[in-house]
Amino acid sequence: MLKRLLIAALALCLGACTAAGGLFGGGRAAQDGSASGASSGVDAQSLGVYLNLMHRLIQGDAVDQAEIFRQVQQDADSSPTTTNRLKLALVLAVPNHPAADAQEAARQLRVLLAESDALLPPERILASIELNDVEQRLVLDQTARELKQDAAAKQAKQSSEQAQRLKAALEENRKLKSELKDALSKLDAITTIEQSIRKRENAPD
Image (cartoon, rainbow, N blue to C red):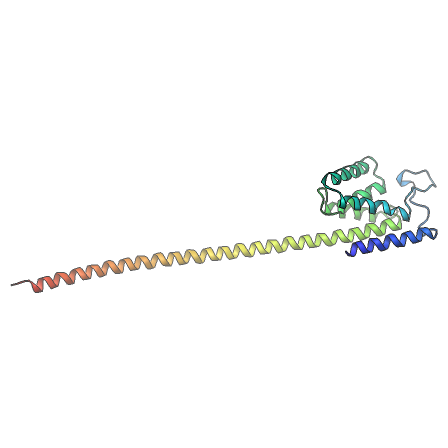
């Protein structure tokens, strides 16, 4: 929810800035393949391209998601411009689709943010927001895995302790049964001896 609010506020702010004449200059330099001195076509308003891509990925079914990712991956491989690289990083960062990869998304976003001239200010803001979201998810996922492992370890320990207690109880029960059997056997022997003695005492001289 927080990320959606931040992105919505960012889009509104950038739209207002564009309407007022823009605050971010004429666009990315020739690194994306444009002629020297010309705009490479990514101004504040064009963040809608990234947001629309992410929206389509979230709303699409499995077939649509696979096709969107395939096209974005192909574009980034064949023409690794900053725009295409950012698209790929953002697509990787979107959760709950087959190609989602938070670890790789975080790595690519860090690389882009580390390149001082790679991103325009609005793109940098979007990349930073997405990187923060991905890193939080990675921390939560790691915490969840650790809690699951701890729970599994505790369950295994409890099961082991219960198995040991059961084994000890069964062994004690076996021992008691054996002792009872021995006691009954001795009692039968004593009874037999007593009966034999009585017979001899009662026998006529």
